[in-house]
Image 1: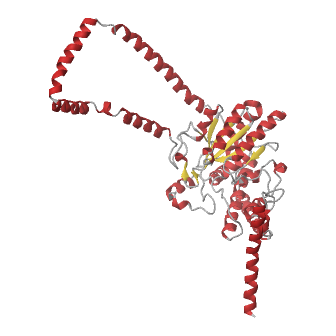
Image 2 (image 1 turned 180 degrees about the vertical axis):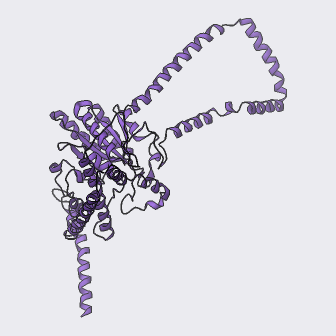
Image 3 (image 1 turned 90 degrees about the horizontal axis):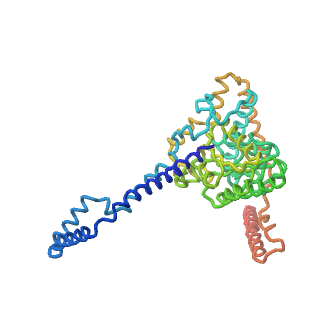
Length: 465
């Protein structure tokens, strides 16, 4: 959006104004400085005579200093005053607290939490009833798959699972905005984007079960493997975008990352290279308010989308729980990139309803009322409200979707339980091409450790007989 650029203009103009005012003041004061030397000297002598008695009365001098200090406290601590002013300015620049309403000019919204359509001067989308139902279906099925994965992890079938609960609109809206020839670089939570790109959900589960190292061919769906290292995929995406630009392709790249990753140096470097080389990449930041247990306001003193201005490309904040707004903003950003105008940053303002991963306990750092405030902005509920209010979907549609959700959950559950357990010795493979003495030793030790379980089981069985 243009807000970032516009926000900088008043600062530049005020600087010029203050500079000209200072020059005028100095020019006006200059003629007064050459006063008569004799009078000036006399004035100094008089002042010296008046000050002379102070040497014989130190107590009075001290009292006078204390009195002066009381009358002019600002002169005693100019540094403290400046620090307070800086803190006040910083507090005004910090993002709004969790659950609060963002100023309308900052937030692109086309569907309110109450399910009502609204207009925006810069972004618009006019989906057909079939397209609205399809977006709703994507979000419902993505949420059901995600919930099933959480359950499977709790049952010991997965080593870990990062839930996307609450972020379905941000992922489905942006995923459906991409073209087939666009390329996506995800983090480890983009299950909804993977669904939109045609990646089988069971392949995602295989990765978190340890059965595969990704499980899908990235070039089959133009969807890269999940990236666990925080923020590094933004550099990969930028490099890929620079490459397709040199090849003359008119496709674009989307790099997903979270608000926590925005504090990483890799993201800053990606912004720099993307701007300098005018790379056709859209940086899509899902600001779900929490980087594990660290809130967004502890990471940035300005809204995240405004950071783009410092690198020389536009940024926009969109209601991440509004699937229509996300769809419209991402489409326009991708066209911006494809048309040779360079990168763009999208901040999807959303909320992580669940834990960071299944190893996390959000109740230790988040308030219940905060979650309740965001539950009222649920992305699936608001679209369903629109479908029902406008009579764009009947009960038969919702009933069929429930059956489809149950079938998806059953298929996922059966697939994960029939997957072969990973070979525990496989982690020693493909580390060094020619082998390594330390790795070989570790492999031998671990093999003996694994064999000890079989020996114990055999001994126990022998005692039983």
